[in-house]
Length: 327
Image 1 (cartoon, rainbow, N blue to C red):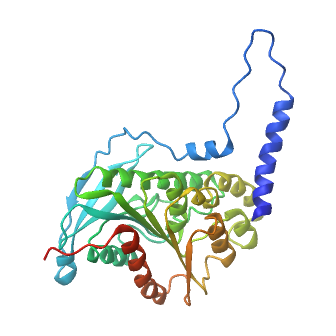
Image 2 (image 1 turned 120 degrees about the horizontal axis):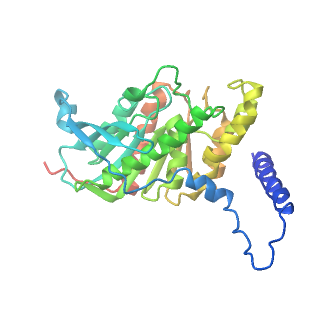
Image 3 (image 1 turned 180 degrees about the vertical axis):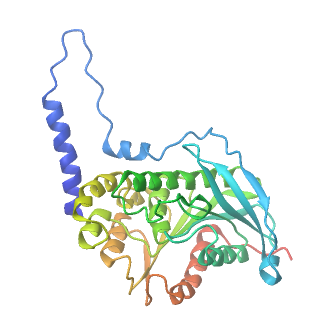
């Protein structure tokens, strides 16, 4: 992975040095052109947005579930504005047995899921039992935002459509934090993140550009997309070069290390989709600061979900706080 990073960065620096060597010295009285922005600054700019953009949020109560789950939390269908004239669909949950303001957790499903996929709902209910609110969003081309001939597997960054979907979803998550911050029933300094698979990978970029996240849990996630692609059959040989270019501005290895809060990585020993080298690359990109736990499970086995619930609970309570029910 270090060799890959040196290759990408070295190539960019070489191109910049050649361009600089061809410049003609300014004539007398002319000013020197300003220095070009750094590569890191360019990367970060792609995930910036206008915070004054109105949310125009529409919040609609959903029918209560029967029994214990209905008594546990209230659910709301939410739609809000993001960049590029996108309307993001989401589910907001609020615990019933706790008094506001609530800590909150932003949730993101994997490439085959959506805002109400079973494992997302299970974790949202877990957060409700702890007295936390949640918001789970449909990533670009997922759930209500699905489009014909558009793949949810946009972490395969070999074309501009996937690259743009990645960037869009990161900003959509930032706008989800805007939604939470706009609500008087939310503790704005206690917002966490939890993402699964592709959701964890997108989330690893998201937490690197969003300073309002306090703690993050990344489940069966990876990074180092270019090297990963070379070692697998996920993309064709002719797609490697465009993937490398897109990865240079999207790969979590360039962002997750900026996050200064606690990170918990939950990974599967028998993961058939995320190679260990990709998990190791993501861990290394945190500067070795993340806590990582390995489960004897495959990528999407129910055993992995059952096993990680206690660890997710312990982690979130540690960093978002213990709450006591009001009744």
